[in-house]
Image (tube, rainbow, N blue to C red):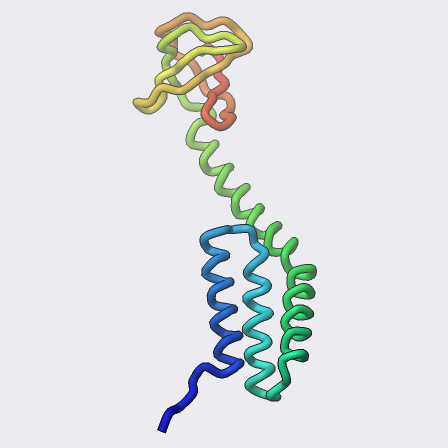
Length: 147
């Protein structure tokens, strides 16, 4: 006696699982909605036993509708969290004291900050071996002013 466990609802569930795991590897924030659509299709099959043509329509409709309704909301939620994280990181730099290890001008220079060399720029010319204050951070470049 053989039990066939690979039913349509299991196949749709596995497709959804693959899409959700792929979303973790490729954070485009699109595949998650198609994974949700596949799981919704699996549930629809389980409760109603719909045929393959209806399964595909349910999958497409749920995926596209959830994508259109929820993607921007989730993206803005994550952007707010990232903005908070960026503020925390910048507060670790702004207002702190560093030491120039080469002269700094508006185009180039280097400072030593927390034991690490950083690219630096300044609106004023600052000589080497001077104490400076960090006033902003742009990626790996610190904007400084003399104390």
